[in-house]
Image: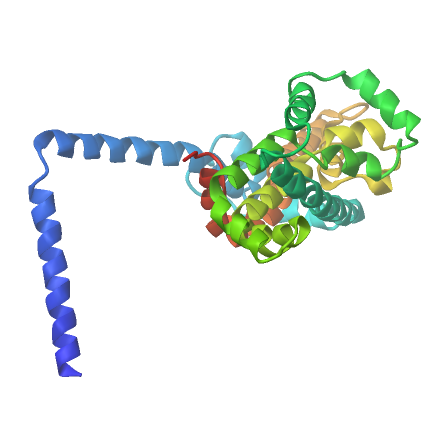
Length: 314
């Protein structure tokens, strides 16, 4: 026991000595570079994090203090009235449930389409591979516009249907090509050849070998599709007429518009509505962002791996 402790202490001393020597070996130019680099990255982190921090402290601060410019480093006169007004509305919870439904179904269907399609396009022996590549590339850069899109949805009888929100979001060509590149660079051909020698067919190879190795890109695609659908509101605004089918983002939009309406009110009423709208603006950002922020840690370990592996070629 004593020997193990002494060996650990000696090893730690050696590591500290090596680290000090490496620091001493840095030239003046290296030290200047690391200092400037650290300073730049710190400023960049502050620029990115401060707006998020400001939204949080503004959502729990007194609206008059926010409007008066008194809130910039810490909350002033902490109040949760904005959260109470938002969370006590039944349409908020209905919008939450609708958005969760839209997001879960979209992610499941998107993965069921994107992953197999990306694997197929990554195979050089796919019949008509060049045709399918062009077939997917053209709509990636060219679209028919809003009116033809609306006419197509109308002809399919999808107006005021929940599927009008789900179906257009199932496949992203950009995500498809990212998945294709991941498979091309990350699945060894030797492994597939070994599976063929062992008698595995194409479907058995895909489900038993490819999918277990594709966990990073599956996690990344799930996150991309989930965030995209969660933040989406335009299709709902165009195609949905029933308010009980509104997603959360559209519900929050309607609340902000209603709170900012000043038609037929006195000066005091107008000021009160303006204060409420300003507070709800920050609260709505917090309410709509929390689920996505809670989802990210579960896929973080796959995120960088999935994106980087899909972007490199041997």
